[in-house]
Length: 168
Length: 337
Image 1 (spheres, rainbow over the protein chains, first blue to last red):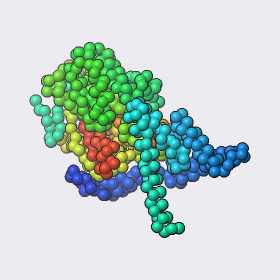
Image 2: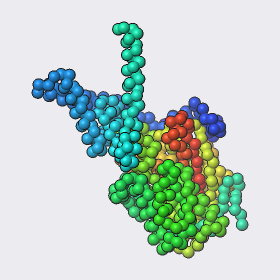
Image 3: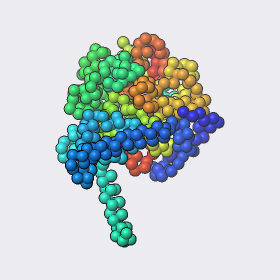
Image 4: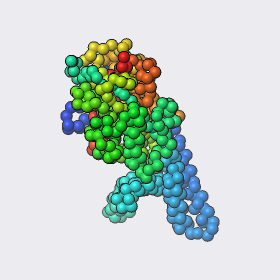
């Protein structure tokens, strides 16, 4: 934690107090002060683990594809199978409580690959099972993955329209 | 008799803490204060089907435990006060099905325990009640799903986050001095302070100014000297919040140095990876009912301050872009003699 000298926090507090119910303040002096004293996450460490774990997951996918192709499965079908196998593995790892431990240090390395999507579906499904199959599991399963699906569809449509207009 | 000092400080003359009982979760058991707690769960589901049921059972267990310790029957308790972190404070309310006492549900987020002691003290000193149970607590797994993400979701945690503590603490307040551990002599009901912090991970920074406001108000109202206090405990500011509070208090000419403790920051060991320490309504409740009361029993403490801090937000308001309003209630606790 950094030491900040010669700052009178009394003034900072007076200037930062929010008194209105209409809270549309973008930045207060106290927010700057807190930003300066708060510990920062280590970008180097986070990037390293994200690339390392993300790379491992992708390599695993490639190994599965190669094995399938060797056993006489068509290229295109093999990659679909590999995705399915990775999703199933990640779902099992989530259920066994391994995937959240991985995500705690790998960050985007474990959320961006298709395994992260599986984790984002299975985790709420386990969590909200206690509220029943329909209002719990059924309704809450997409709380984390839902935005990904919606945005994916919207952006795909937008790109398709651009493609159509430009005729590329 | 004088009932108020200055602007906000209430004075209590006959409020005694008879007994306390603390129930803590498995992570807290392996933490720094593991030996202090009366009972620790080995499994955070406590043999129940859901975490919510486990939390409810924890409250019941704490109330039964404190009654047992104080040798009181449930019908000798006239009122119970308390709250938890869940929506509509369901855990405490559901636990109350088992008792015939009247019940006042309270909510000030993590400051609920201090709030319940404050309200309880008013009821006893006002002559309305003889025995009151004050209870508060939280559960990591229930709070996490309500405020953050599902447990099994792999996410990177920010280094400013805290860990919601699992546990519940119950105290019996009584007007009867016989067999009391300590007494509550003064209290300050805090004001809501909001300095615009929007980062819901950084609760300590959001709550520190509220704690500062209440503590400064207490010293202004009472003209007490810091030397007279053995310790000042804040609720769940965490390590970062405690550091900010130290700076804020210093600029208000209050320097506690090594007398300032934070219940959340003292719960866990470094290797338990809770980053800034514990948070949640359980922190001040379990630390008060174990560590602090033990110190009074061993006569190591004569006079302390307990400032319970609470961040009054919901996931809804933070998604709407609101900042985090915070509150702190402060109590002066003295030994009986």
